[in-house]
Length: 274
Picture 1: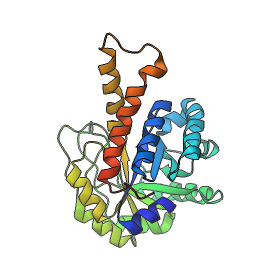
Picture 2: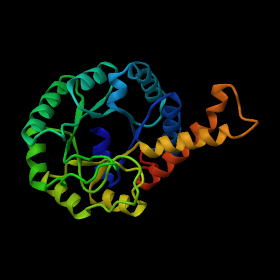
Picture 3: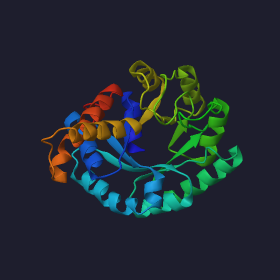
Picture 4: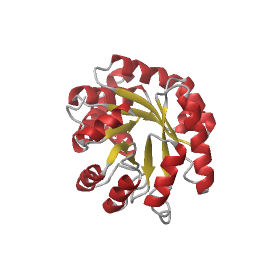
């Protein structure tokens, strides 16, 4: 919440980067340090449900402790109390409870329950209203309405709200067009609550700039981090003189993640805002 308040005051979005291993954490942190930007490092719920989260969390915490820029450790798309509770236990400083596939009243009830629980530890919660699906879905769910968003924010007490305004998770077959007027209307209806845009990978730069200007204060990037990392790995594997030692081999993929993250930091206006 502290990061989002700074972003709102200065009119930029905090970039939120999903990480999957030590090398992606290193790439994200190097980008934040070089660009002097506040960042959110976040983890998918399946990693917290599996043993990966147990090993990955200390790496994220160590990176945050070492950083000279503000870093938040966030759970992304937590579907239940299992993932949210385990994430807090592992040291997360922010939680997302994603009840967007539930009926409206049930989404409010579950989100509020998690908000109340997290409040005991001074951990803020991101909610989601209007399901942000995947690029593989046959059609998009209905977009978030300002009226529903107003009630959701008031009754749950979330610190920020992920909204459905035209994006999806995954690789787009064609660039999406965002409903910028809807973002502005939701901001106004929710008394300028910090809004979150999921599915930021592949959204045209100009659309992202418009969204930030309209009130998006947290911008998520995940798929493109995977592509930056893996594409570099695949390229390196084709080279006959590639490094064999894993730590040496990983230096270029780490750099690829760093360069991608720097480009997104600059795009959302977070450069030199730490």
